[in-house]
Structure formats: C-alpha cells, structure tokens
Amino acid sequence: MKGLRNSLAVTALLVLLPALALWLFPRGSARGLDRLLLEASLFQTHRSRPADPPPALWTQRLGPQAAPLWSARPQLWWQFWGTHSSAGAVLVLEVPPKTPLPENALRFEQLTLVAPNPLVRNELQAQLRLDRPSLRGLERRCAQQLQRGDAVYWSAAGLSSLLGPLAPLASSLQQGCLALSSEGNRLLWSGEADAARGSLAAGPRPVPRAQTRALAPPTLLALQGPKLELLLRGLLSSGALKQALAERYGLKADALKRLSQSPFALRLSAVERGPFLAGLQLQLRLRDGRSFWTARLAAVEQALKDQGLAPSPGDTDQRLWSRDGVAQGGWRWLSKQQLLLFLGPPPAAVEAEVAEGPASWSLQLSPRQLQAKGLLPSLLPLVVRRAGQLEITGEHPRGVDGQTALSGELKL
Image (cartoon, rainbow, N blue to C red):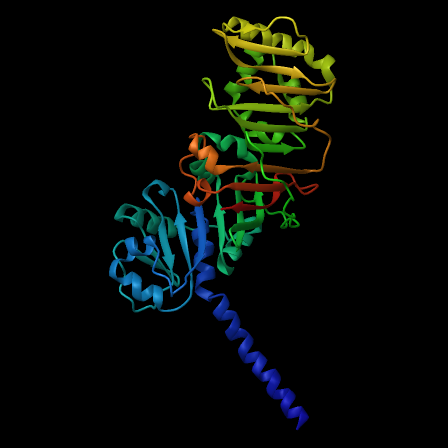
C-alpha cells in the first residue's frame, strides 16, 4: 500500500509540474518575446489586474475589445518600442486564437501585436520575417526576465531616446534590463547592463542597494565613482571634441587618460538668483597631484582669456572666471591632490575629500525638483519625473570589461 501511495505521488508530480511550468511560462510567449527583443529599443512587462479598469494603452489599441480581454484572466502583457518609438508603443499580449484581430494588429507565434498605426504594423511585420541569430548572454537573460514578471529592457537606441543629449554620459549602460518590484511608495529594481550590444559574459553577481541619506538642499543630483571614465568614455568617443580639447585647451591624450582614471564626485546644486538655474561642481582626486596639472590649467587659462573671460585677482588656490561681472565658473585647489571644478557661481560649501574607493558608483537625484527647473530629459517616464528621489548603484565585475550590475529605487 505504501509503495502504491509513493507511485501515485510521483505520478502526480510528473503531471502537475509540467502543467505548472506551462502556466507560469507559456511556451509560445518565450519564442515570441525572444524574437521581438532583437527588434526592440525598449521593452516592458506588466501584470494585469482584472479588478482594475484596462490601462489607457489597451483602450487606445483595442477599442471595445479592451474590457473583455482585460477582465478575462490575470496575465502578463508587454509594451514594445522599436525604431518607430516616436510613433508610440506596440501593445503585446496573448489572446485566444479565434479572437478577431484588432485594427493594426498581427499575430506572431502565440502573441498578438497591436501597433499604433498601419506604417508601424507593416514595418514590424517585415522585420519579423528576417532571419536573426538566437539570443545568448545578456539578451537571453533579459528575455527570460521579461517572461517572469515586471521588468524593463533597453538597447542603445532606447537609452538615447530617453536621455536625449545626456545619452553619451551613460555610455557604459548601452544595453540592459532590470527586474522591478514595489514596497509601499518605493519602486525597487536590480539587473545588469553592458557598454556594447551582444555581451556573452555570464550574469554579474547582484549588487546590494546602497544605504544613503536623502539629498539635502540645495543639492539636486550627486554622482560619485572610482573613475571619471564613467562619464568621459562616451564624450571622448567624439573625435571633434578630443581635437578641440587638445588644440584649444591643451588637454591632449595623455592628460585626458590620467583625468579618466581619477576618482570623482559630481554635484548639481540649485541656484535661486542670477542667470544660472543650477551650479555644477566636479571634485577630483588627481593621482598625479597639483604639480602635473598646474601647467595644464595654465593652458586652459589662456584659452579662457582668449574667449573674453576675466580671472579673479589674487588667490592662488582658486580661479574664478567672469564675463561682464557675472561668475561663469572656475576651479579651487582643496589640497595637493583634490581639485574642485565648477560651472556657475563658486560653491559656498565643499563636501569631504574624494578618496580611493570601491569599484561601485552611485547616483542620487531629486527628479521632481529637476523637472520643476526644466533640467530633466522630456521623454523620461512620468513616474520618474514626478518622483521625490531616485537612487542607482552600479558595480563593474572584476575582469569583465563593460559589464555593470545595477540596483536602485525610486521613492514616490
């Protein structure tokens, strides 16, 4: 009798486990999402809540079909942006096979894709007919994450559309994905990114969220990291910019390389009066010390004079440059290795010295205050622009060039 019970238990497991797996991870969705990800600039997973009304995207794309499909059952659904991102998102969902196709829709594998207009639909249909390589590495992990629950994926094109002119500053995060969750009024995330598409490296070890204090006024943004290369890599990919720095300011390749290796802290602070909305401060720990950089700053001084700026007299530790009596920026030596560069008025207070630190970097900002001053990219999601605080921590695994493990939170 005992053997019979054991046999029945094993049989039940063999039947139930595959059924459970199919319910959690629909077979058709995996193949469909893998293929769609290769055409995506942005891709986001959502969970439906049938008790709530359908989202605006469902109503816009599905019309009268939205309500019955939404209330039928809990399900995962997706927003997809391709090269047509300016036209709006494609709604991606699973519907029963005999359901009539909505306007501007097409079926792909077990998925129904509803485009914003016929042009996007036809373009997407043509792209999906092309042969593409199978997903590997980061892309494969991202596709799996999109099937499991709330998540977001981006490519270089998606990052560029979100950040606009600030995109070169995020060159180390050209492709990546985040798993999302919520706790009270906080949106939490963890994931990975890479500096180039097609990374085959194994997934990085998760990085814990940093325990940080809220930004104190007037600070709007604070970024610190072990190497200024984090910001300079994308900017210095422009040959024209490197040529201008060398010819106009005397900052040649050797100086830029040394500068890129410097630990740094960058802050953006609100300015209540005067021509500036905010002041920018960049504090550096220069490993070569003051003696090496004095000659380089002398070349910069001459270039600024040639542009009509006037230096403040006297103080050898600080140089303040003005135009028509209005401070435009300058620098201040805090010690033999600590240099503070600033744009706008000179900062009244200076943070603690930048030290050699861990391989991680951290970013804090107050989106709501930045938005009020018009200092946020306009295409960032509304939930981000309205948030009180955003925090991101990134860590570069040793021996894996370009890869970053990410964690963070958004406080509403």
